[in-house]
Image (cartoon, rainbow, N blue to C red):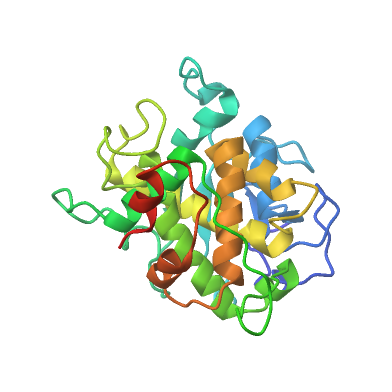
Length: 293
């Protein structure tokens, strides 16, 4: 098969992913063999265990995804690192929790705006403390889940499904805005982080800012693919399992809960949702620190 993906079929739901046998949501192409009968989430997850094409077993060096609907030569590339090239695990961490330091993203020249590193990591000096981000780190540090708001005409909260998300450009824009901010909770995803100020594991902010920005951009697109494919609050726990490879089980569960609350809400600005979200009392001082403006 030619490595030039026919982008006219990239969003078709008629083709099934050969890994999960479900409809392809975000088509991915194995490089260099050119096989493209995969969903992005499935192929990247597969390659974390063995860097071989699931169809022909040829070594896979990269994955092409997010193809432009108008220009077949415009796409993003996820560079695969073979399992034997991964560094040893940090003591006390599992193999899956150490993978987040091993990703590199390469983007081909594109006429579309560059979304990869522009929002993050361009400052030469550390920025002033971000109060909203500090509050979000407290949420994860204490394991606080925002209180549920029912779906009704008064609250204007609504139920979101993968089908709704896939066909709603505004929802996708809102998701990206919230995810970009939220991923900065972890220092290995925040180019402006200092090693002693973030919710993270050991040595997680040692990577250069550009690498941390690339890590964040990859994970953002990975989460968007999850939202298009599975119910993030589904009883099967598929979304949580996919995300836990990078954030760990507890943080993934909390992240998806908060993301669902944001997407269900009527708010268009992240800061408005921050002010509206309410959390259970966990002790004097903690609730005040999280909710005060």
